[in-house]
Length: 108
Image (cartoon, rainbow, N blue to C red; front, side, top):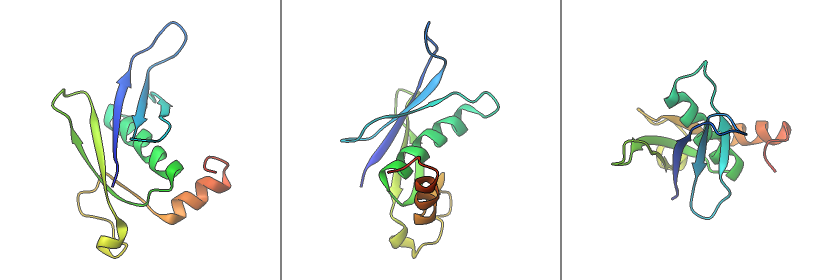
């Protein structure tokens, strides 16, 4: 089971604000800050897209590290709950999500 951490990165001279999702042993996934969404929604989107890219299905629950700035998403595998969304889950990634994003060229 892998945990996904997401941190906010402020703007620089060359890049706008963004959220960076990381997990051990995989390439990071960065999404631009969408100002029409809340910071939590932006962070969740970054984590969800990293999970989709990696093919990690399951229900993800969210927490925050003691620094107060790093969000953490941990997967509870779908098989544990017979494919049903987990009550209180931040988001779910199902095989259909992965196939849809693969068809759009976002996942290999």
